Amino acid sequence: MNRAEEIQNIIKDLTPQQVLAVLANQHQGEIIFSTSFGWEDQVLTDMIFAQDLPIKVFTLETGRLFTETYYTWNRTLERYQKPIAAFYPDKDKLEKMVTEKGPSSFYESVENRKECCGIRKIEPLNRALKGYKIWITGIRAEQSVNRENMDWVEWDEAHQLVKVHPIFHWTLDDVKAYVKENNVPYNPLHDKGFPSIGCQPCTRAVQPGEDFRAGRWWWEDQSKKECGLHEVTK
Image (tube, rainbow, N blue to C red):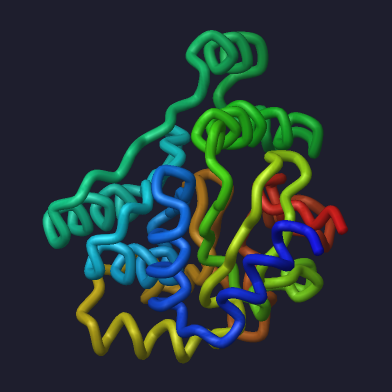
């Protein structure tokens, strides 16, 4: 039995709040949560901060976020009075890319887009996760076909840690109900047709009937709408 299976056996019958509490208690100083201030992440942030759990909360400050995302970030700090660590891109790599290719090179090719994601998101994520053994995320199965193929507790080979998605089996209605019942601050872009929110130049509203992640990198002719943060490796 691998480490992911061991953890899944311990938490398999628990509520998301209980999952977070048990893991925080058993892995103090070894557990971290990444937030992008979307609906799902705000739910987990509330669960963590409301229980005063020793789980580090961080975000990737790509430098290209929506004004509404910064607004949500500030509201979250005001509401909970808890720190949220910010990880920025490597200055030298970012300056080199923008100097050589301009500020919007990601529109020109998939390779350029992946380079931008790598500099603004992947490298800072690697630094954020270094030294931790459990990574908490707000991933839900119904968000995309790619994510349906994931498990709610899995081994992340790239980062050598266990990823846990406490609300993996929740529906969007479950998420919205929790936000409403607990008066959780949420990104106003959700009310404008943005179910998935990333960097401002790379995210648009989704039309009725479109896939959850259709608004991400919409100019690319591909079905797999991921930037590399949550690749399925199994």
